[in-house]
Image (cartoon, helix red, strand yellow):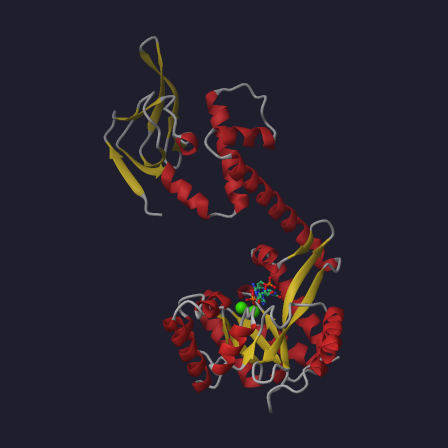
Length: 408
Ligand code: C2E
Ligand code: CA
Ligand code: CA
């Protein structure tokens, strides 16, 4: 957000009572007085100095000014336009949007001297609706914010109470459709909300230290389950090692002891490093290129596979292929799906698969939902695929049943 400065001489009016209100101001330098008009005369009700905010009601509903503000000395103000705040708010998380709207509503009510009857969240929300929010949007925000607050509070106990589970999605070889490996995907079996998907709670965990406990759980659980899953991976492509892929977030991977922790776990579980594959997204790499690069190099030295996840979804994928020794490229579903839209997109996927092979990497196409896509990718030389068409992520017992049915 670029700052909008405004300079005033002493004694200048910043705004008058009755003016249209579109911005709030923070005093950077100088001082102002807040004036009410009484019997045609100004009456000073307050004086404000550097760091103080005024005109903030404008941030809520842009009505008219309820007081006049005049400078007492040469003054520099930072203007916060309502439109700026709105666009920042629109990008914020639902909890933040909700809380800011409630707080602004409090300010408005306090400032307008309205009788203090409406104070519950729903009453305040009803007011927010009146001030321009559609009921749908307000309800949606409230629902999302409540859910997120509940999840954030409950997550602390989720690990201790064994509510987290790892499910495994098969990754198949496109050559003969045999089972080549698995991707471990975390699930939270919430006692009242049912199954919560990682997209909802991983970002919450990433904001706190909880992500480290989740990372630890994922590594331990995946390595513990591996001896049961590995025997299912028979008959993969000649010479290929069966593998278990896990996802790690930036805070887990950017710790300087990430390498030691993974190496120790492999050792404790007697798992061959070549059988473990760690999936990293561009976001993880960008978060701390130096540490991530060091950890990747050390893990590769040990034989652990490193996959660049969600390739084609971000922007800088190619940059990292130059500098980091990935062993696998995972082509994102959105990128694969484009293949059906134009010949050009198809050529780009084809070149990506070839590039990947030239750099000595294997390629996994993600999100395959039909035979036609699977066949096309196989023709194009893509080695592995993963998607609902082959199998959904499943618990270990579910996976065993699926495997038995497949063999029958
Ligand atoms: P991801 O790593 O890209 O995982 C693939 C996601 O695509 C999974 O969603 C999977 O269920 C879904 N998927 C697989 N095949 C298909 C398909 O054919 N069609 C469609 N529409 N979707 C398909 P999921 O399990 O909800 O995970 C979402 C994301 O959460 C993952 O994306 C990953 O970034 C993150 N995540 C999952 N497990 C973990 C974990 O243990 N640790 C961390 N840090 N992140 C995780
Ligand atoms: Ca992944
Ligand atoms: Ca992915």
